[in-house]
Length: 125
Image 1 (spheres, rainbow, N blue to C red):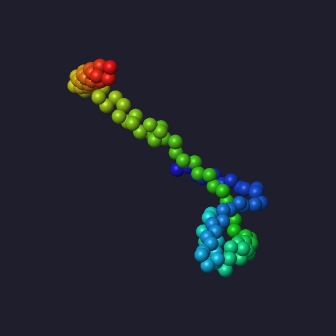
Image 2: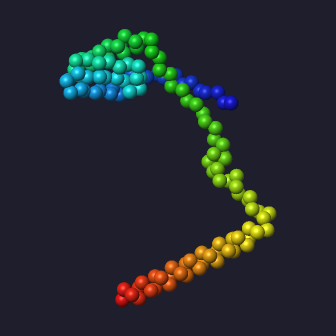
């Protein structure tokens, strides 16, 4: 099994998305989409955002964001799963007969459709 690679981030800011729900009574619920454990309820949206910002500021020294890159296996089989069936009929003596039957049947269908198309064109004229 391959080991994961840790990449140290040099960024000083972390951008997050705030989910802000304003209720009919004017109160608000604010949470950080990427960090759902940070969720507050307040009398209005401004207070909710301020409280959320304060909570994150209090905890930011305890929080560490570490990006991790995990290499996934690139098996040839997963790219083309149907390839495991390639050649399955190579030694089957009936395969050519079945192929011929399918070809003849398709030609019959095409001929029938061509006749119907000709009849429709003639009737439309």
